[in-house]
Image (tube, rainbow, N blue to C red):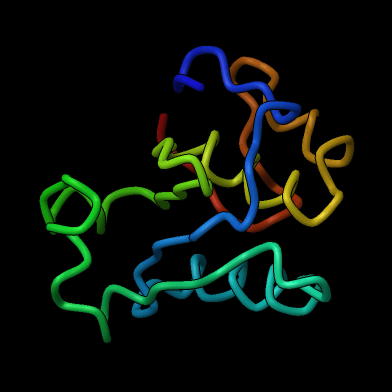
Length: 116
C-alpha cells in the first residue's frame, strides 16, 4: 500500500490509529470510530499520552501532529485521508468513505479536513 494507491482490499487488521487527542476534530472522529469498533479491528494511540510514538512509527512528533496516521498489521503506514480511509475500511465502512477520495473533497461528513 502506498499513499497514492491505497487499496482497502489489501488492508491487514488490526489497524493502529495514531492521533492527537488535543485536536477537537480528531477527537470527534476518534469517538466515532471507537463507537463502531465492535470487533476490535482498530487500536488507538493518543500522541498526548504516548510520548515515544513518533519513534515507533519512523515519523517526527511534529509530522504526526499534522495528520492522522494509521498502520496496518503488516506494518504499512498511511497518513491523512488514506489513514481515515483505512480506519473506516477496517470497521466495514469503506463504501461510505469512498466519496472522500474524490479530488478536492473536504470530508464534511466526519468534520475533518484531512491533509494528503
